[in-house]
Amino acid sequence: MTNRRADARADIVLGEDWDRPGGTVESELRAARQRRNVIALNRSPLARKIIMFNLLSIVVLVAGVMYLTPFRDSLVQQRERALAVEAQLLADVVEASLPANAPANLLTGDGIDADLVLSRIGVAQGVEIYIFDPNGTLVTSTRQTPGAPARPVRGLEVQTDDPLVITEFLNVTWNALSRLFGATQMDPPRQASVEFAQSLVAPALEGVTILRRGAGAGGTSYAAATPVEGAGGTLGVLVVTTAAGEIDQLVRVEREQLLQMFVVALLVSIGLSLVLASTIANPLSDLAAAAELGRDKNARKMSPTRVRIPDLTGRPDEIGRLSGALRGMVSALYDRIDANEQFAADVSHEIKNPLASLRSAVGTMRVARTDEQRNRLLEVIEHDVQRLDRLVSDISNASRLDSELVKEEEEEFNLVHTLENLSQYHSEEAGKKGVDFITDLPADPIVISGLEGRLAQVFVNLLGNAISFCEEGDAVRLWTRRRENRVLVVVEDTGPGIPEEALTKVFNRFYSERPVSQFGNHSGLGLAISKQIVEAHGGVIWAENIRPTDFDATSEPLGARFVVGLPI
Image (cartoon, rainbow, N blue to C red; front, side, top):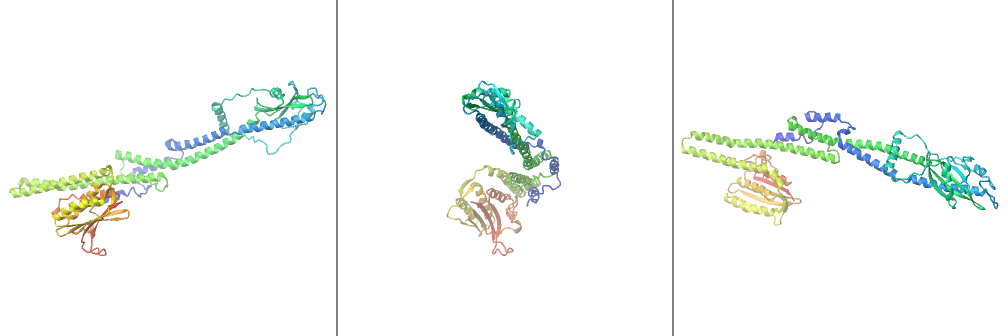
């Protein structure tokens, strides 16, 4: 009989409504979903990994930019170049104030008033100018004689907004890491501004402009020293120094802007990581929870309902594929369980019939009085024992078929050659019964890939069934044709045909539609095994009646036809 119960239960998994109420497993999954939120990272190692890796990439990128950028070195080079040009220009101004052909002395003021010249020079804020004689004695400076204030320049103001707490923390952290892992550099000794400027006098007397860095109370300062030439030779040295920490402040502002962008990118990365984690980790968590609940509940016999895998097949990604695969696997598993249960029930039912007959025959044997009665009972017992032996053998073959089909290796073979060999044997069998055996096989070989022995078992069963249903004068025909990417093998007979209501049942296990004279000679598993073998090869098999006309379904059949379609 058709396994209606198995069919009815199998559709619970495929095409079901996941949110349908009812069932212990579903209620627990819904409760777990409600307890879980987006930021529950302690329950999702995958979500933590996604966020960690995304944040790590941002950190590496920002650290690399801050470490490799030549921003500070570029600022220093530009400032030193500008400072050298500024020092040379100021020296030219001082030299232009000297008498043309008369001797001059900067320290005594002969021929030039250094304080007057320096007071006329506009000095930018933070810049100091020193004038020394060749002996290193300070002649004058902008500290003693303040110069005229320089004209302000719009657009060069440095933004000095208070940094954010988090950027201040990151800045301190970066400085600590830079000192820890960076190349060790010797900081210049800390000197007073006058001493720092005075240390440049001797090198500058060689007739070149000298650039040097120094350490002050507010940070690094830069100085440029150039000689002042007169009619009698070098009259002194002019030194220009910058305010301490001027470049450091520019670098700090630039770094704080970069760190602020890092904070923004960090927050955006965390938000996107949480969204990504929720779209990946949460569905996977649902799939894992459904499988775990099914495993635990079924193991403890606590779940009366089936495990339902969430339907995520609408997602166009690997998670959707995984959901579909798990749902199909669970459906196939339940179908196999149902089939095994039904098979066990059918086996029990089929074995009970010959056992009941044997029990009755043995009981009757005790009260039999004549030898004729005993012989008749012995024939019944022998027939039932043979029937049990045949039934157990077929059941054993059917139960091992799945595993054997998986273990055996498919090979290419010539299907026409196989059918020709089978035809020789069955033509002799049909001839003994007075049945004509007709073959119509192509001359060209048809090569397919599969298990030759198993497919031969299918054709032997079909040919044997066709001959068994025929009487003297009937005919059996075997023919095959190639159709594009498949091959059709057809077995026809001129027997009584198949009842219409049995066309869909003949492939069921233990179903048999045979005359009374053949009762017990067949287990009813042959066609079921044949269908299983054909479908394992990716093919199809069906049965139909041969009628005088296809338009008259009520006409008497002229015989039966079994068709096997196999892919090439």
